[in-house]
Image (tube, rainbow, N blue to C red; front, side, top):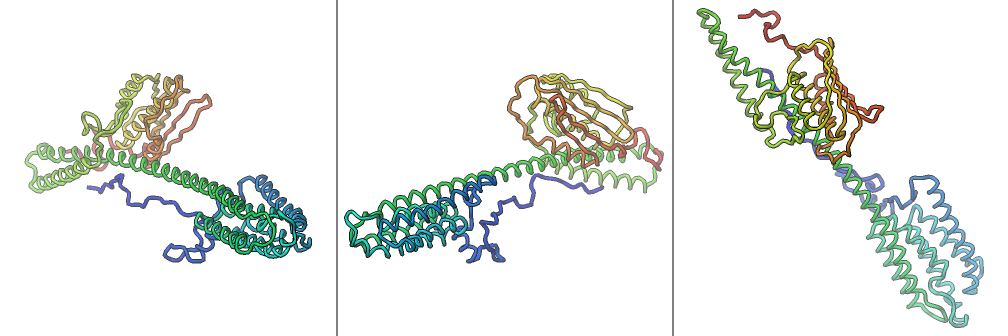
Length: 472
């Protein structure tokens, strides 16, 4: 007896898992863990989100963002230099140098936010220390100190860009360091007349980092949701395909079991057709019958595992090995009229046409043809209620040609009870036999399923012996 491969829903292949994006993965060791350099790069902002540079997938939006950042940096460098020079009675070149460093930090924060933050904080601290002696000579209430207005605006922009790229732990660390430096300079080194900006600056810095962190967290959550949705859809399609393959395996086992039963019966009846059969013939026929019964027992045991106990058949069109008689023979094209009548009773206007001379086919071809027509009619019931359906079965020398076409739905389409992957099963069946299935929308808004199943594997008619053998 030939071996029969079984296809079951249990698949040993690993479940697809998400892989980190290149920006998130960093440098990996041979064991898959991130190296110290990779972790450092991620901490320094090498894990951008959609809100990070390049900010958008559209070129015009990126150019607009870069233009806005450039104008902001230029305004802080030039106008800020004038403001610092006048407020602190400082030489304009020195003031311009400080504000130019702040502007450079904004531009640098687009790609390297942590070094940009360090540059911005260092420039603001050095400027505050340089102008500190001048605070004793200015009248009350004095200028803003330790954070001047240009430095405050520049550092807020840097922190916003940093929070968009750096993870929460790094953002909080940067904010804590900025707060500590502000406290040390504003409280420990305070002298002369000035308007304290330490508390206001820390509050504004907190708002900037909160906005950036919120945008980053929101985008990360959306990316994870999209990723999980994609994985779920792939798993659903994969599971549906495996279930359909298991269903095909059950039906093929049923067909094989039927033929094994016929072999067993023929082996039992054959001795009675010959007068005084030789002892060797009786022994061979007994061995054939025993092997057939043993194989049939194994097939039934496997079918008991594979057969579904509670299948879903919402339209009463039947399913393989189900219903009140789970061990009933598998359907063939001879039962096509009954399938069409059931579909009409379910609410569709179905017409059928048979072309060519009807001839016998292999059981697998007839079963697959029946199932393809059944699935196409089920899809018409689900997605085109009240439509007109035309079923064409063509018997040609090269095989079976099936066409199921439905018109647009005449009533609102209810939610589909199916899994949405019926076409996978049709293609699997046709590909298994060397055929193909084409499903497409028609010009009038309907849907058409065309299938070809080769017929060159047709068995001999039941009333004729196999080629090269003599009838007993």
